Length: 206
Picture 1 (cartoon, rainbow, N blue to C red):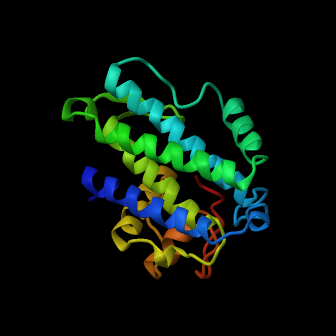
Picture 2: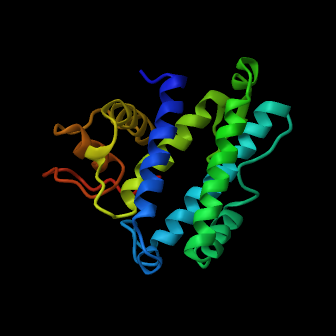
């Protein structure tokens, strides 16, 4: 079972993976399609940066008690991603680095009591603030693979993959998951490319 400390470590691990992939890309490569249909790598970068800002809103909520939703609306979230995808690679990289650093500092400053405060996710779930690092870990780890630079689910930490499978299984309401290598099962449940056979299509996730 994942712990709060586990999630914090996975945020750091996933962030390093994500930024390492970006560092190897040229400007034109960032504008190329990602592994997510309809999104370029710039869309992914904008999404990951905006997600850090949005989760920062939840950290602020936990710290101050002031209700601060992740996004003002789904339309605003999508518009920010589309606008971000039009930025230059250097602008996007700067935004990603700034937002990631700001979120890390804000989380580090929360007290034990503040971590227990309840916040509401973009999906409308009321959760303790301790869930915020897990939400971020999922984003940076899974989207590091989605950049389509050759990284696969097999490059993610086994403990993270186990937690991810448990989480997606619960979110999708699945009674059981197919047999197979853990990275492939995780990829399948996340709606990504996988090597499993004779399994039904369960659609995209995250």
